[in-house]
Image (tube, rainbow over all chains, first blue to last red; front, top):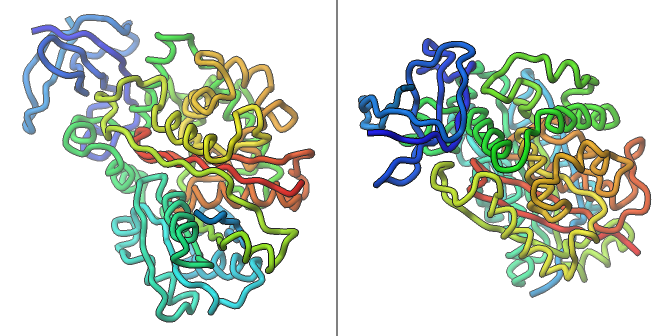
Length: 72
Length: 388
């Protein structure tokens, strides 16, 4: 399943629970059949180009059941 | 509905005040406001107290009763209001409604926050509760990253605001140089802001408001009573608006128009019988620099998409068409969360009275305050009018 980036940010300074992951990408995703939602996109590499409208792929869910995407 | 005026104001210096307690901050700002109003404290009939998160940051809840005891207000009723960063102006709005309705004649409104004694991670956790914990915080977002996503969406829908955002920061720091209560009295340059490392791209540390300890209080009274106390120094509240929107960023109709601001401003302008062109100064909620730009548009000072160009053209500078955040704003005066909305009222009243000293603006009649909570989920707008 695919989604599209509605907007995003690369986080360099995170809360305690996520600080080991920085830098990582947080985004609002548009996907068919579901309302816009906030999710992480995995697989960010420093300096890689990210654009609004870019397609991303559903990678699974985190422990709380929130969707996680990955760059294609 | 009766007309309501501000008759007294008081605030502490904003900053890292680690040797001072909540009691201390409340005592200083509250005593100043009551003394400034020129009334005996037994004339105060109720207290509305804005506080965001002392429950977590100081393990102190029940700040209404706390403030009442510190200020020696006896058995008057107290209410604590919480609407994230708009907590202080919510207290102000509740006091206005109560006095306008005739329930009370004279009411004290306060706000306080003590934050800097906590670590950055603890403050981040404390503030994060103003977003949706399940769907935003636990996914890994932070407030800077939510407003960074707003900035990136704005760049996509309109144009890139990196330079205008930097100018907001530089301008607010320059304004704070003239404000003795400001936390950050230090000039910064465009080069410094643009070269800074990102917190959450495209925002750098210079795009973010400060972590601040501080308190601000105001006394409001029915205008007919206010005029008997001091006709020269009372400032009438001619417009008040309050609106809400969804808590989460993802569910907003738009990220680039804050409809809470549009709606609260519409109410305040209608009540005042005024238009954006009638406003001579505004204290707006610059939690992040992009917010100041979008707010300038949503309050009607600039067309959509033109807010940043207006900032770059100097239109929001002290000498511009619509001076914004002459106090230094949340960016440089500071952001003591529960007190912020009242500190904005403090600045506008000081300016409209002509008592702002080095930072006094000339020829001003109407001032506006704009305070939002969370990701623009709560908003109040107030319009105050000075003497002819």
